[in-house]
Image (cartoon, rainbow over all chains, first blue to last red; front, side, top):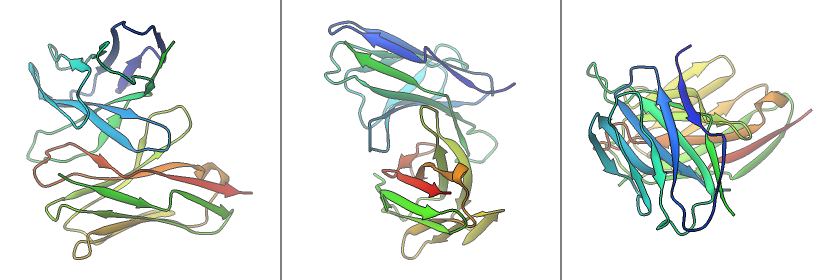
Length: 116
Length: 113
């Protein structure tokens, strides 16, 4: 089955630690995205990548880092510089090729990160 | 950049009634408007989308309307069922945002049996 997989589902982090959230897709999508979701709020864009080895900051990139070494993978690292990291993190991917710039974004099931 | 406002934040209806959720956007160049349904603890799933060259789109009990002049779009769910209970998000992609979605704040829909 094609889809987008996030792991782990739940993650606990001690203050001062870096943690990495995994996101893998087998949809052959060009673009991948990381969103943060807080209670009662919409999704906010952290980072996005439209092509391998290239990525751009979203609206709330401070305290986060990403890499895009493979088309299928877009891991997100939450660094100790992120002061309020407890949230639900969602990864998404979409197809940008073929002359259709904006198409459906498919989401993973999310990772809930809690600082303890 | 694009800004999307969504109303209401909560909506409670009786089974069989209709539900309407409204969104406004700021970037007149926006050209793609999806609606997502999110169940508790899960990722959002697309339920319907509309492009700027279309005024209305329908898929069974769900419809979306777009008014480009007024820069607003709405989700209509008819004959609601308890399984429609979820959080619904509207989103828009701005003219220069190539794939990046800007989301509304979400609407918690509760359908009472």
